[in-house]
Length: 213
Image 1 (cartoon, rainbow, N blue to C red):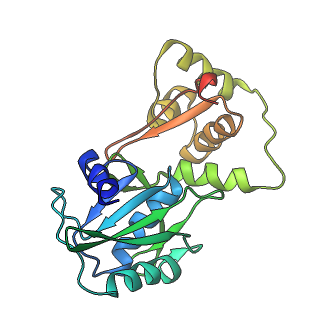
Image 2 (cartoon, rainbow, N blue to C red):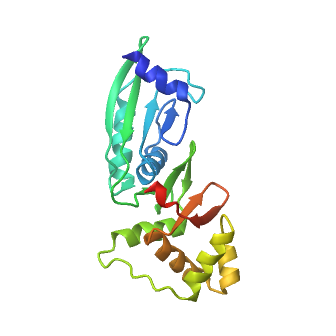
């Protein structure tokens, strides 16, 4: 069974897999739990260095730090499952975080504010405010009624001839204030016509591929 963990490690860190040599800060690890929950779910392997070397954990404190992170520093609490593995005499803690059905989840920062995080590649980054608005709109019992005004048509027409658009560019061509432009984009995201992409440097929007479901 140790081959299961070794094969995971061979994948290297990616959007659904993160290595931690140790956990000594529940607030910090809460970001990873939230990022996994807000994106596609994922696994934490604790007792594994960034380079994939198995160092092992020494005490049960690692599990208690994860438990504290999920319960005290994540809002709402993040569900997780865990399992200990013995790999060549060294213990590795596997923590499995499912993709959240209802988003967003927030992690508490050092200054006491609650922030939403997402997983992009092997990094945890702050969720764009538009994505947070989109998640909240999805939860709204009222739903969303789309009115195809000139603002919506302009955005869709632009994206019919350009692969992506930034919020700044859309504000410029539509002559809209940021909040209004965000609302237009969120409406089209909820309608399944537009999707968002994000990395640590920028956020962009594109026509959603209907084949993606």
